[in-house]
Each structure stands twice: as C-alpha cells, then as structure tokens.
Image (cartoon, rainbow, N blue to C red; front, side, top):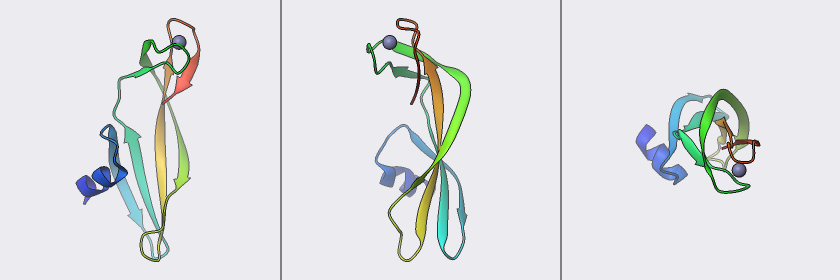
Amino acid sequence: MKRVMTKLLNLPSVIVGDSKETKETVILSVRLDKKTAHCPHCGQTSHRLHQNKSHLVRDLPMGDREVIMKVSRRRFKCKNCQKPFYF
Ligand SMILES: [Zn+2]
C-alpha cells in the first residue's frame, strides 16, 4: 500500500508515512528523503538544516474521497548565496 502510494507520487525521493482515512478524506503524510538539494538561485549543492515545515496539499480525489497530502518540507541554506530555501 505504502509502496504503491510512493510510486503513484512518481517522485523517487518522496516517502509516504502515515495515512489517516475517514469516510470523506484520506490524509497522507509525505516527506522528501533528501539530505542535499541544489540551490534554486545558483545551483550549488546545499545541506539541509534541522528545520521542517509542513503544509497541506489537496490532491485529486480517490473515488469519492478527497485526498489531502501533508507535505513536510526541509529547509536548506546555500553556502554560496546565503539564502535559505525549502525543498
Ligand atoms: Zn545559492
């Protein structure tokens, strides 16, 4: 089930954690399994900081239930341009 979901998301670095289901909604907790990311400003590889932020994304409905993804984003800081960014 979890593997299928991860595959469905079509992103190799996305991991599906908990899922909560009710009659009307399915809430999936997803996170990105990345320790490094490329800075969107200069392309330099940056390491993540220990700050997480999560936001809710409404996905396509599955049958007659609404799918909501709780996405944890990780904060990175670029050494080159000193700008933080989320990935
Ligand atoms: Zn940069």
